[in-house]
Length: 196
Image (cartoon, rainbow, N blue to C red; front, side):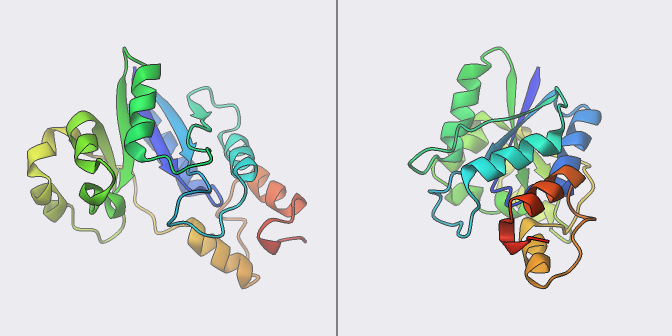
């Protein structure tokens, strides 16, 4: 089985997060997707919602799709690095192939991550294009690891959680960007000051 590990802050999880997973599954890049929300101890993320809120929203978003699961592995009282997460799932699924789902924006500096080269050496990377990103320069940069880098044909999008939070702050409509159940959860729990 091919298992895609899809990490992120998911603050909030939105339709593009869902769409990426569905495209990877439906185009047979992977057989299962594991969503792994970043823990609140991660130093580069501020204003993260609680771990529980983000887990709850991800579970609502996947809507009982058996091909998708949500893991709380990174929700610890310390920073958990991506290489640790991938090694953990490799132990959980020793007979399967673990793929790391990664946008071109993150791939561009993955060599600077904690044991980033180890990730490039040991795992297949499913690359999701961001609009206007130059793939050829990245492939040249990581030529040594090109056998592990798979450029997917998942449709790119500029949608981001940051954009959604900005729209909320500006009292703009966001229903087009979120699954209905996630939007309802945000409103009912008064998240991001969205209370009505």
